[in-house]
Figure 1 (cartoon, rainbow, N blue to C red):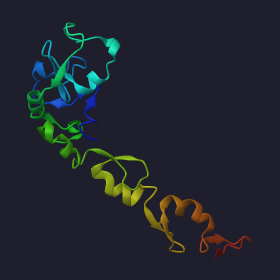
Figure 2 (figure 1 turned 60 degrees about the vertical axis):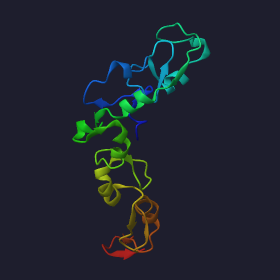
Figure 3 (figure 1 turned 45 degrees about the vertical axis):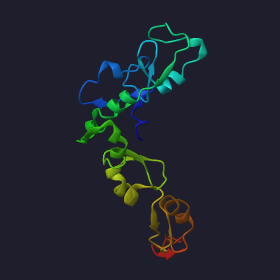
Figure 4 (figure 1 turned 180 degrees about the vertical axis):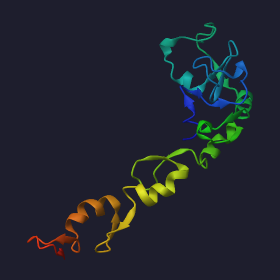
Length: 184
């Protein structure tokens, strides 16, 4: 997840510490503009992706309706201002205390202990980063375990399932019901 995850529509949907200037808001999605493009006709900022999502039938400028060709250019000044806006981590409701510039948000998420990430053991589960070690050692279906009977190594789901049914050293109750336990 990175800043892409922090977007709804095309603009940034993050928790800002202070209210961003109205001039930084996209004229289409009404969020802080991501990759702001400035319209020549009225000076409104738009997210680049919001503009790219429009069709030729949508007409000209969606704000002033004057320029039918909607000429825009990258607004580097607004981009610098947006990337300096101070935000809270979107995991602040889970207890993350990080706050910093929007430009640093992606880097923070690569180390945020409360960020949900996909299991590195490839089981497909989504887990908070701080719970990953416990998951890999105790819960992941793809963790490596050893059969307690024959000492064969394999993935947990295979050892518990298919291997247990075929383990050559699995103790079984005597089929004559004498109470003895015999090895398969």
